[in-house]
Length: 81
Image (tube, rainbow, N blue to C red; front, side, top):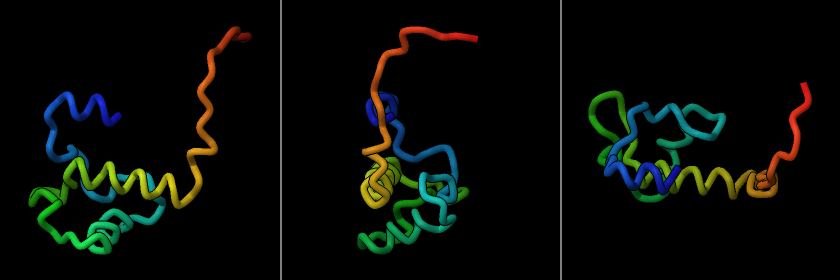
């Protein structure tokens, strides 16, 4: 995700601040405030978050919920219908 979005030069996401990894609808906005940021990190149209803040929030959510332990990298060797 981070490599591909950085390569596009995208500064703001296409989706609003309510679309993020956490289950609480306002968690990204709350995270921005808690880290000393205000509305300036959201585009005026649809409150689209800045990419760097979205990425930091994702890392925060993954760490808070221990999701890195759930990530499994492997190779499929067979698919049985």
